[in-house]
Image (tube, rainbow, N blue to C red; front, side, top):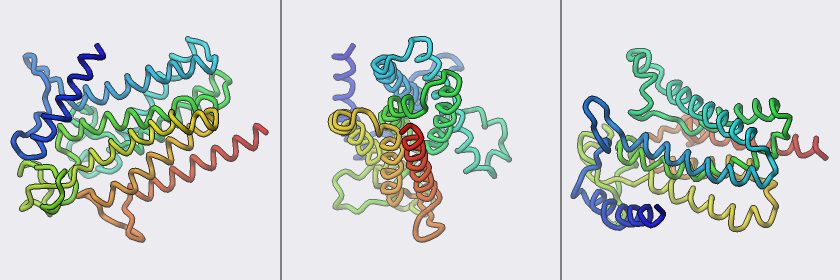
Amino acid sequence: MWASLGTLLLYFFAAYLPRAFAGDLVPDPILLSLFSLSIRWYGILIAGGILAAYLISERELRQQRIRPGQIDGIIFWVVLLGLAGARVGFIIQNLDYFGTYPVQIIEIWTGGLSIHGALIGGIIGLIIISRKYKIAFLKIANTVSPQVLLAAAIGRYGNFFNQEIIGRAASAWIPWRMYVAKVYRPEPFVTSSYFHPVFLYESLLLLALFALYYLVVKKKYDCKFGFVYAVSGYCLVRILVEFYRADYRPIFLKLDLAQWVSLALTGVALAIHIILTKRKK
């Protein structure tokens, strides 16, 4: 299984992605069609990210001596409310559209998830489950939160296949620029052909943060900062990448809504960590 997965990843990064970036092919959002059922890359990659996060979180929670039944409950609530929060967050950002097409609210398989909403929903899920099982919030949050970085990094490739998150037009001297078919180009950049691959920027930075946590931070600090590290780490990456997105629209002090929400979430995570750490002492 691992050999097959490694071969698939090697082909994707060494052959498929360079061809897509060069414009030799246009990514197909549909992996497989069976009669009237379409299996989309977006859904597969979101599910793959959740599965990877689940497998690592299960192992880490066992090391914290949390019972198997409680582990399943923790992961269930975090994933459920995380997905619900992700969809609600996206709907709030696009109220005018969903007010016109309310049926599409449930069509998450076509895209449309907010990672900020997923973070908020996941935190609410952690609060609920920590109270239910009478386990310290930080004990659970520090253990499962870093896996969000991995899940988000994998899920971003769903945006690539959907061609739904486009970067700003890229100069000719940038070797990693990405070709985008005209039908997917943002209106202000419709005459441009090549764009910054913001999905790739975000994914690689998140993977680097995830690896840094398990190789350095966790070993040095004994899993005491997993929650604040994951939330603030994702928010920092989002703030940086946002400047390259085609939909970047600053609203105050040259920062857009997503960047301000990132700053707010970082502040909330820091406050939760400080308050609960002092209360424990």
